[in-house]
Length: 348
Image (cartoon, rainbow, N blue to C red; front, top):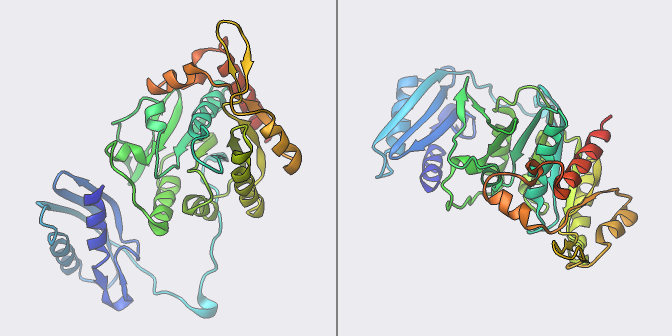
């Protein structure tokens, strides 16, 4: 990832003088990849620019990095419109629908550690088990966990017609930044890079025809959430929390963000709701009781489901098998199916 960032920074130093912008800002660089010490990408050349000279300048700039052995550039001619100002300037397009996708549902939380990704993974699988065509985008740029939960680590999405093709498992189309990074590589990105990544994941991916695209948001209300809300029309949000009051404080902030952005909040999932002893059947409320119900009453949000603390959830996730795949005789799978049914009913 460090090499990719180094190349990205060098590309931003290559200027198109007549437009007074660099080739990255102009969107001329596509499909950037680093394999070992080889850098490859597509370079679109503005009308009137010498393609040979631009390619040469770009290669020279990248080779300032001492580890680069080869630069493979696919040069394409491209018209770049002169920026317009005043009355001629185009108005922002605003959130767009993704072609072929009926509904985009985000799974969010006010804070980390509440099991948001677990809920997103199992919601997606349960929707698929209900016969829906489902995609799951791991939008948790900084802590992607969907590849581990679905057992697809190491599977790199292939490229077709300059677009990414999602990996498929359990009939779900899956895409995650974690599929493109080494497991221990941190993502140290600020707002603009996060926005660009979301734009490519949403619009430069062959999602095909989907009933639902489930998006696993990072926790909180930061750059990723803002970018998604600016880029695509989000049809509903599922909020994940745990029972204790300290978690509900952050959930209120996340919920209010969606309300202000006019995104319907479908309801709340209370994770780690209780522990049921497998021997005696006694229920223990380890993190308290009634938090999500209290939140629902205060903010008018329905309680979609209560997921217990169950070792099977952890064990299944560690071996790449979401809990919802355990069969309908398992209580956790039953609860996730009920949540999926309520999400579907929100759009019928």
